[in-house]
Image (cartoon, rainbow, N blue to C red):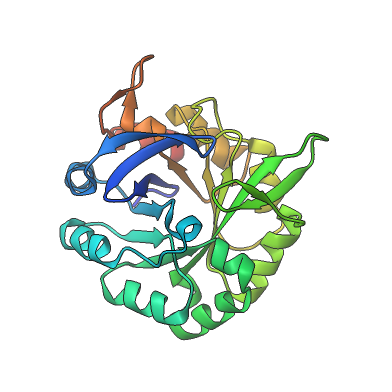
Length: 253
């Protein structure tokens, strides 16, 4: 495994994969099983699969899809979407998922983080934090796929979830997501410098150099990307890919 994990982030909407820009305008990418099979051949460190409409629609986790995907996936897989209870988490992990990702549920019931970490271990619990800049330039935590602003400061919320037992933070700059214009290094640094758990940087990657900057300038422990791994060229043609291993090792160690 690379010293800095490079994680494809796959967005599930219904039974298909999509890619959003700033959490809007989902573009159909294809069948998740086909994408998993391609990534299996690419020496990918791990994958993140996020059901982007489950919580918004009031649905639970997509267990049938989860089981179908874990049967095909040869690398560690994290799943988020529709998780509301310890029973949901237990069933997801039993289905072959290595880590769960909670966002809306963690905000609604922070004690769920503590209960999950206690029962399954902190290493199995990732808290997703979605952040936008306000009109005044400050950072604010959002939920419901970026639609709802919360009266939460990202730094304080990151410290809180660490204290409750989260093993990792999946940090997404909503204003950068899907744009392929680079990570929000200021945001990454503001979180990575105040917590002791790994921070996965997400939102905006277009090149391996972006990964390097997220690590060296932002202090990220891992990097996630979506558009970079599913779009090619100026017209964003769909082509699932992953950088050569040696190129990643040269940039990230």
